[in-house]
Image (cartoon, rainbow, N blue to C red):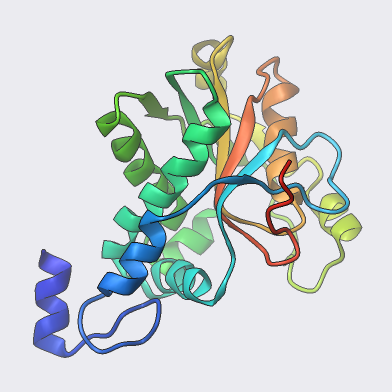
Length: 227
């Protein structure tokens, strides 16, 4: 409600389609409420990637929403994006009625620059959405950067994998708590899958198997295949 009031006072527009009004118009909100999760395997899939599930293709509206939340700090978008992520997490959990959501870690400098941690914010919203449906979801910020990789922009899939190798590590205090638990690694978007694969590696190298990965959206070349 606060976001809507600010939009009305300052003359905002929809982050998805640009229509004047509130942060998210009814049309774009409806788009996010009619999602059908799908397997989003990259081609080729990186080694070690747990089965990835996406809530939506990374189309124009979804792209704008993700960027507006991440880069422009339009905080009210966390709730609908988190609800979208929740649909992917629920599909990834399968028959499990609970599990731990482990977000891909962000560099501290990046968080400071943006003024917030977008993925952590979306993941919290996803946890709330899942718990409202009776699913015992919990947030586990269990991963950290142990070295900062180079900028991924423009890198091929193979170079992204090499660039990220060994970049993430497990926070030791989480090791015992996550053992033998349903674990879903989450991110906002999957492109080559190298980031998620590195997160899976960091967990599984410490004896913590990953059930699956879940994202808000998959890039267009990774559309639903029926798998």
